[in-house]
Image (cartoon, rainbow, N blue to C red; front, side, top):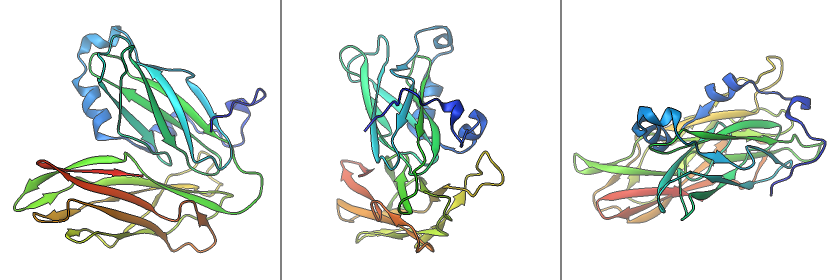
Length: 265
């Protein structure tokens, strides 16, 4: 749910995050990078993708919010690549409507956080929206776990389906310590690392504890005759004082034609 308190201003928050820090901690999606590179140089002076509003606020412990945007002159069905900073997640792309409009449902971290969501498409200048999540006022210690982006594709190599690295992030509230790692469980026919480490994203205040961390899962593959669908489940480990909502994050995998497409809830 999106909230815009009339007296809320990003500059008055106790957890300002410099733009450089936001970009440095970003987990950018491959479609956004590919679409941005595909955009011709002339697009630098052309129309720009725009979010409305370009500054959004999420209430404490909000799980999702919906952002709306417009890609001027984009043909219906054009895919808009979406990139997320650490702690946030959502779909890798959004389709433009008949008027170039699109919507994106963003999954937000808990705790005080701020990030820049970026949208890119060939022939257009990229656009961005700054999302601020308000810190909770006391209450239970909670955490969130997101895959970012939540879609990818595998290629068939050497008799197996090979996935590129799948990335995600974890956030905790009330300044609690991050989990030491992420445990992974695979459906029949799929293999990969049993667990991966969480790398903290340095906070803007060097004396404050890190509340967001990122992780990357490399080496996921599937046998040629693997089940055509299933879930790879990620669960935080090494942290017992935080309740994660939800408790784990499933990454759905599905065999479609000559590719395995994966998308998480």
